[in-house]
Image (tube, rainbow, N blue to C red; front, top):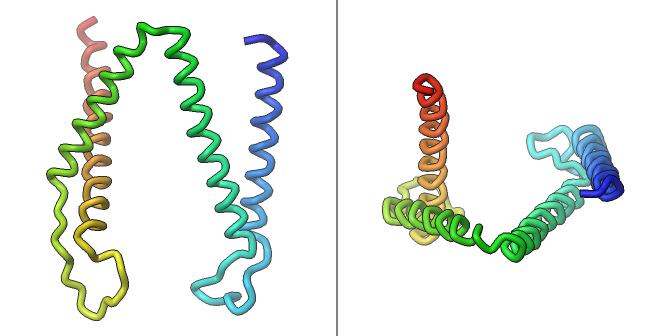
Length: 152
């Protein structure tokens, strides 16, 4: 990467950090919506703007990840095999989590809100079990790297 490109990227990252800090300061120390001040449900005025900014950053991260992944595949076609293996492993983990997830409607007396439907519960359960699998795999990877160093 050229020195100019590196410098431009560094400036952009610092600007994004500055904007994020300004939003965070406005969120925590700025004005609140009328009628919510002093209550448990106090809502900052910039909540929607801050969320929109977060969505934009998230979309940019996804877009850049896809673009650079495609560029990497074009530059290094031998890497496709590793990418496909990673996708298959991810699919197996998610499918296993989906199979293990429960969709039993919860008994919640006096609760009249939504979200207690079998489809929603199955998706949430899949997400939780996937997270548990990934935490377990991370723990095993840390353990393996520590133990393997002893025998080298």
